[in-house]
Length: 150
Image (cartoon, rainbow, N blue to C red):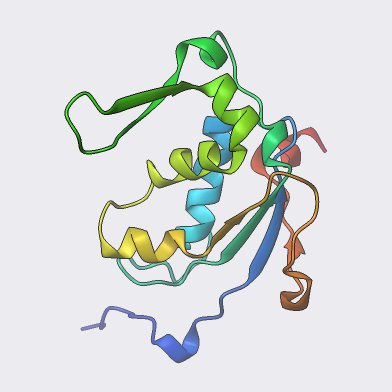
């Protein structure tokens, strides 16, 4: 009988990828980022085992959405006090904190537990084209939609 393969911590390599979010559709972009964080692109993928990669996202402020989402989609937060709910539209959130838009979309596609929180620490998001992770030698990652058009 064959034993099930289980990746050991020493066998796993965590690569660094840089992805340009300019003119990418938010939802489709977030699914591919979540797949990288989970490690679903690797043949030794095992649920619940951290074999995913680090992802650096640049140009977050240039992310695209379809339809009327810029004005119809809202993000909510609550202060904890009665009547303390606040809302902000996607358009305003992109103007003030574009990193939070992508972070919220990716978080919605990851497990909502300790494992998911650990994966979110491997996601680095920057509004502009520059990032401070050059020492890790991140590779440029080509998204699925871009591969089909080549």
